[in-house]
Length: 239
Image (cartoon, rainbow, N blue to C red; front, top):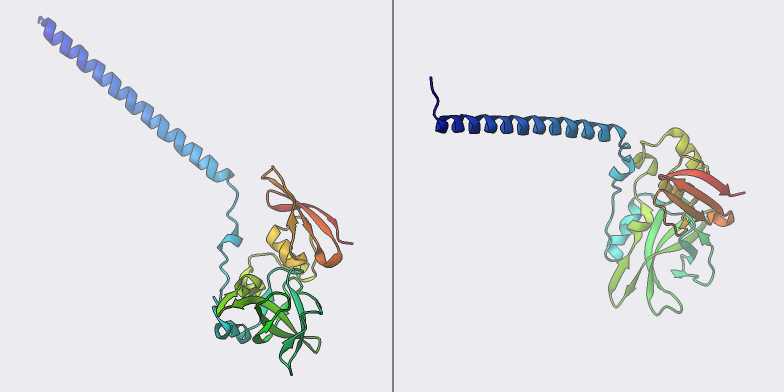
């Protein structure tokens, strides 16, 4: 049987098309397999998600004096120690002794807020919003906001937990919580745990995202912590 030149050309074009399609399909299959393997490898080597990111503490969102008095309805715990200054408070005169700084709230210090008041802070020209609490048989007040011209700015949600921190971060180990409760900083702890244990810290400038050095006043017992990948690798000072 003789095949015409036109038929030969068509057959050749058909075979070329089949070869091209087969090659493209084979390449796509190989690409999919490699992509799947790469994704699985990446998934296997990726660090576990930080459970701390999924903790959402409740907030009161106070916007005036009345709403701020919600602080009296449950205990509160200071989020950052050695940051917020408190003063003596005279219950009889309802006056704050701003000229006599008593101290700063300790890390995770528990307070039973008795009242929320306002008082004129000397030299500021405005009134402070203060949470009144008792400690050691004496009454104190700690500023939680300000009011000017009838406008309130209250930051108690940034200052306090209104839920028991042990329950909020119950995924932390008993050993970690034991160190926090004793205000001890140990290697392996993260920055949030450090805040709970030894209070606020001041980070040093760094161009290395994987390493961070933070200095902690720690109530007069200066500590320096070097973090690698978010975990304390070196703890200095504190004696």
